[in-house]
Figure 1 (cartoon, rainbow, N blue to C red):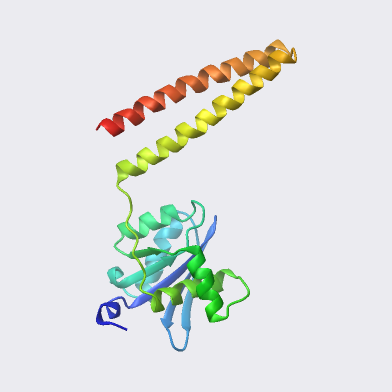
Figure 2 (figure 1 turned 90 degrees about the vertical axis):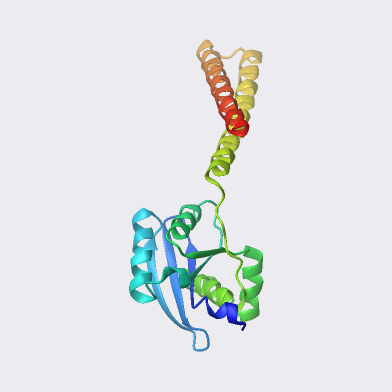
Length: 201
């Protein structure tokens, strides 16, 4: 272990689910002594993580590395929160973690074992620390994603309207489809203007 690695003293594995966070502090790598805590995946739960870490691990949050495996979008708010609190955050590649777990002989998947594997991965493999994207970039990505989703909805509504017209559907169904198409078109154009404005700025 090199000198630079010794500065990072505390490794925390957090297994993220939609509604809960399984947190594990690897107290000792050789004996595998741990401290665990289950908290809610919500702002109050995030505050409780900080309280638990300061009380149980250290009040110097800069010495803590939190290992997290990305889980859909459920990890994102936690990552930004921990980063803004001064902790080191590492987002781990899922395939790398699975291979690492196999190397450790971990077979059965449980939340506690997952957080243990993450903490051991951090302690044994130099973790690449995560840096959040610029707020403007995040906003732009979200708007582009929303714009793309609305375009898909717009195409689907047009297809529905076409079927309604061909099948001689009720006037109310046709009227509803035309209303949705008009509404979606207006919102798509509004978002495009906002995206263009962000890019120009």
